[in-house]
Length: 304
Image (tube, rainbow, N blue to C red):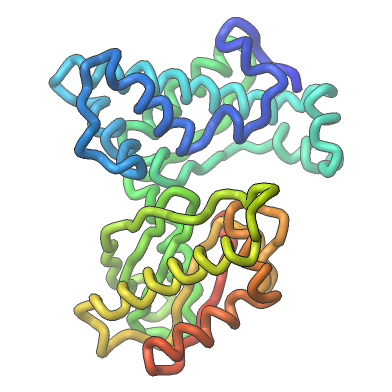
């Protein structure tokens, strides 16, 4: 509701987090800005544009680096304003989150460390965001969070999920289903540690849009489900370690879940609740049939 600092991008006031910062918004900004800098993005699918932006930050081609600096600065400042609003917890913003108690705001006010993960937080782009966040807090005269980054931040969630494999000394498929990419990997777990981690090419997320008023939720959910099943089956069949793969499949998913049940009100994966109250069980049954072996699917909220 209220900006915690004025003079940066004042027109953001009153807008929601998802309306000012997301991977899709970064992609849209790249597409809208590329022509201004004579940058050719025709060879890139939309979901790979953030990777282009990351590389462009250190490009020797000035038109690429200038475009990347402008976009990274813009979204780094926005992320700084979001974090500053959380740190300050001003009354107007508290009223905008009635589901939060004072305990939530106290948590953000006293928090020391914030860990960035995901594609936008990796490598040079993450470093640029950290720099701009620091600048926002300095302008406000407020103690900043200690921002931690990882060069392999794209796969932090996947590796965290891999530690949840029940069986030691096993090799398994681990996925991270987000709203931009479906990340895929083959992981070998030793005794309570990851022995080998092999990332595979990511696949573009599809059918994760929210269901519109005139759309059939069940039909949209079925399209998404079939796409997810195909992605898992194709990954399994193309794995060079297929004979060694465990019956466990772990999926980090951008949706709150309890056991195998998804939250029906949260994000693009929420519509899968139209198909089953226990989506992990549905995936288990369908995949077991298609793979002609018994597998067990576990879902983990991607923030876990």
